[in-house]
Length: 193
Image 1 (cartoon, rainbow, N blue to C red):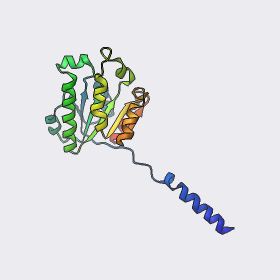
Image 2: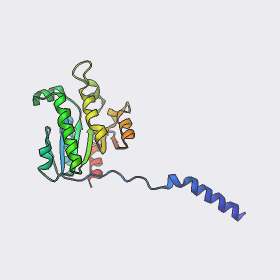
Image 3: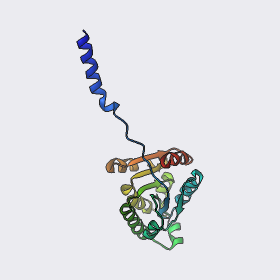
């Protein structure tokens, strides 16, 4: 009787071992941060407000270049995804310019061993609105950044189609979703401290 009880307990422990294994550590990032945009949407301003509220050391440069990455010993690059034709027009650039600039930034961040966070903080409204029927600039900014990030920080409302979940699963990226934009304060406190 004791032997069968022992064997049963051993079998249960072996079966449960994968579930008892340590959970992966929560993603972490370090300051100082260089904050930029891919698409010149207002989301970069929202992210700036959150970082300031948390008290993190960061610089905002919506049109950051590779030279900006080398100007300070940055540890993290946050690229806010979301395109605005109005914002790009005001900056005198096209989406092709943004994609090229952002690609070069991420390449340089990798060389400098920086953490790259792709943030989409404006939800599905930003993704769906477009400037005109057939406008895909927002989706292009996502394609340029999300698959190349280490961490995706996404408003759950902007992932209702599972696009960011699919990218994170395919690329084995950490995906942090939030329900309300104010939740980003707590998330950033945890992520950077």
